[in-house]
Length: 349
Image (cartoon, rainbow, N blue to C red; front, side, top):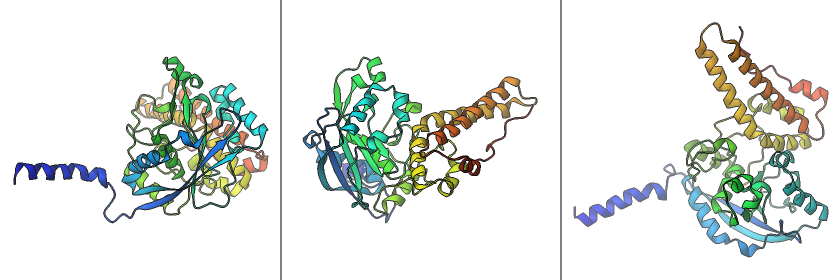
């Protein structure tokens, strides 16, 4: 074989995984995308369409999702004006809240800004606004099946950015939209270096990327075949792609659909998302504490027993807090039906 031929073959071999990482015979799935741009007299909300090069965005997003043989095709774009001035004011007021208080809003202020989407259920919807509080890069509203995305991130609205001396603003990258579309395809946050779904405060220090593992691809394609986004209200068990369950998820989710009404379930889903990071951190700490108990021998040191008991109490309190946030309020009878023994008994002396 001539040197040039050997080089050509080597180049083709190296390029092949990048061009098609899918399983043999895996058919491509094309999903419809409708992008909405908010028009408003409030500068924090107003999102002119010309600020985003959607063609370039879609090219990069489709490159990211190529490994799953999933592609997004722009169905249409539209602009709409927020007519409710009170909703605009409520959104602007979010910038005055600290991050914890903002998270407790559970997405209510975003929901009030959405257009009417009832006629396009077989479409993935993205709603652009100008920017978000606390430097948020995007949000997937699972009960509505809608991605809400800022066009621009400002360092002045992000505490961690200010602490690092960052100033100015930057356009939100296409991979942020690719990440949020991952949520729309049922994927939850990961703690894996280089993964598309790696995000959140408990992943600091990990390199973020655009890779998808086999488990995520399988889960995303399962949703993609339906042609519509994942709706956690309708699919309460869906935790695809996540290595860490949400607080109370495995024990409570099957009951939630039977016990709570439709409006309560939507509120419950938002509350679960708001407490996800805290629940993951507590779950990890509790697992580590229990591991130390198992390794300590007999008798178990008192400080380890106390640590496990305290973490279990905090996790149980967090689960109760999720129910406290549900609106309309959960009745005592509903709580009784949802009540279950702790999944892991506390260590005995």
